[in-house]
Length: 268
Image 1 (cartoon, one colour):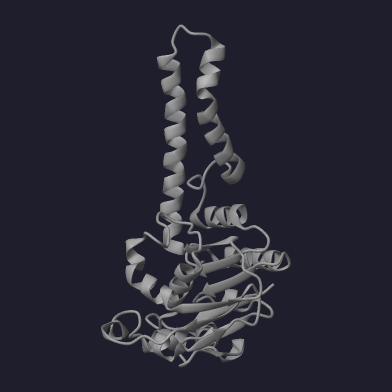
Image 2 (tube, rainbow, N blue to C red; image 1 turned 90 degrees about the horizontal axis):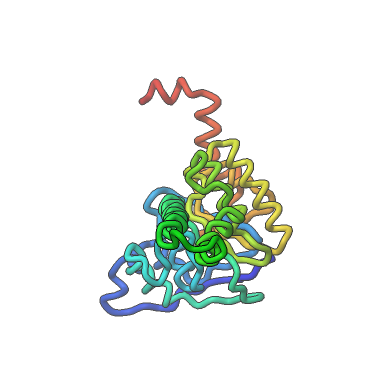
């Protein structure tokens, strides 16, 4: 399902046009960007602006964030919010489901969940002290909202997002939060994932595309880019243009290195 059909950058004049992120060549060249597949990859070198563009789309659509701050309050997105206001959206079907996730925000989110659980467990212990000498019924009633919080966290995340490896926990979070019919904006989701876990993420993407989800993903991973039927927008080309998988520098360079690592290492 393609929920978000396109975005268009409205013309910007005056001093703002010379400021970040409006000054980025990618943004200046953008005009109208169409999404023609349920999975679209934004690919480019560091500094190309692909992550900035994804952040601006998240701000524009008011995406829920999986992180420590919302797109409306995150201080790191202050400049990008201005670009988000300049984006005109075109929808097939407007959806409020979905989220925006940057790999670095995952760790902050896991920490926040751990703090929530610790606070709830502390509140349960505090009830035992405050209600000493009172009936078990009174204690259980006082503990009920805190136990409910713990139960809800365990029901969604199991033992917790700090109980396993980063890759395992990232996939656990992804599985627990993705619902059918949503728009999902992912910035470099491969960062905490091994190659095997990236293949697992591909499987999850396929399952959720079959359930009417749309994904916009900024990535450097040749593994993720291989998703069947995906559109790969090369952000090193201005304006961004669909590029075949086998023509991407990420793919050709990785393939060449794996075939002859000694040649590259000698040059280094």
